[in-house]
Image (cartoon, rainbow, N blue to C red):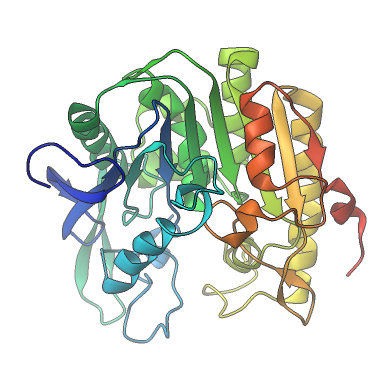
Length: 356
């Protein structure tokens, strides 16, 4: 980008002093919209929670595409971000009601939910010593401030949305985001397909050195719930919340096997048993949200990814799931629109009761 950004055009924005987890150059993506509304969109890309997972990223020679996190801006990750500008909530399709919103979208290549500030040494699979840069928080804040300098910081409606790893970021970084903006309209946080159970307080403190104001949000082994509950407690009904997920999510079921200590590596595929465990945990998570977070909507769907074990697709805001009703009365897109307008609800809860 040179000079002022053109309305409707996507730009990459390099930021001085920012790095991906392998030390390579990092950047974010922006689009100036025609409306006075803002979408902050956190993308997914896995987690590194210990030296073992740090040594096993995506794109490693023996991984066959399987790994715990995205360590750098590969051609694949760049293409994924380009695809995001054509599908889901960032699509410029006129049928998407968010198509003309301004967008701030950080890349995700740090494995730390965009909330780390640490550097850690680990041993790679060849026995060499390497450093993983958990600089997600450092990157995001620097990028956000640069993006606001380019696009402006005053808007009407605000949606802070994230999918997969980015779903955690959406709730955990809402405070940092909104404190740098002037928002006069409605506000909504969307947490899409984010559910891992593990010792988060150890990870945030010992692995990522997450800033204290975010670490204090973590109180249970369900960080997605903690982030949602924090928003409800701090802002009440002033910030609407949407929590969405497929009922037997492929990626979340797959990775949780390692976190549960049931596998000595990230498995190459999700199993029926893993999907059963995930469905049970999702049912508990949804029940907890319904009971304690009245300003939250819940949107669930059943969309087959793997026939054996009936394992379902991962994420909904970044693909064609977004505008489809998914056997519900409304689409995920409409659910978010309802939330922005102050109407909450629960859709697809019956999927949690099905036996597969």
